[in-house]
Amino acid sequence: MTPSRYLLLLGLASLFALIGVAQSTRVIHLEGSVAQLEKRRTDMSDENRGLLCKIYTLSHPARIADEVGRMNIGLMEPVELSKSPSAAHVSVRSGAGVVAHPSDARASGRATRAPH
Image 1 (cartoon, one colour):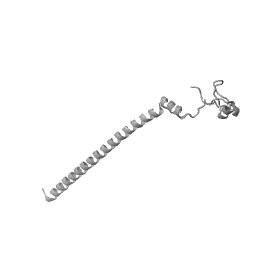
Image 2 (tube, rainbow, N blue to C red; image 1 turned 90 degrees about the vertical axis):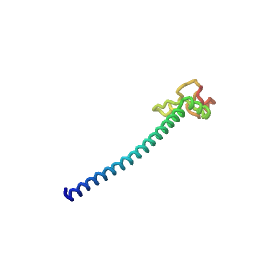
Image 3 (cartoon, rainbow, N blue to C red; image 1 turned 30 degrees about the vertical axis):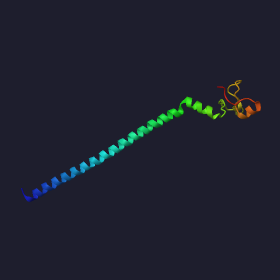
Image 4 (cartoon, rainbow, N blue to C red; image 1 turned 120 degrees about the horizontal axis):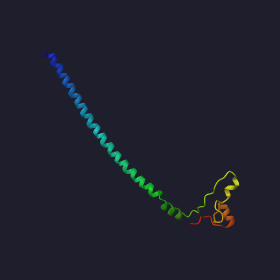
């Protein structure tokens, strides 16, 4: 073989070695990135699970009822809205001690809280 062929062969071998080293370095870097992303996904999954538990706890009907009972805010029965503005002051249920508007309760002397 001629010296130019040896140099060409040496150059190609060096090129392939350099490409191999670059690929190995890239794989190691990507493995680190994958590990970080897996940890982040696990952390976010744990946080999501905790938030779902908190949502369930806070929106549980018994807990809401207890909280409303403690607040003593004087809830009224909902009023059915119709097209006429005068009908907005009419109670949905009559005779149950429920008043449609707080000013009606003061005028009539009736309680504004719904019966339990």
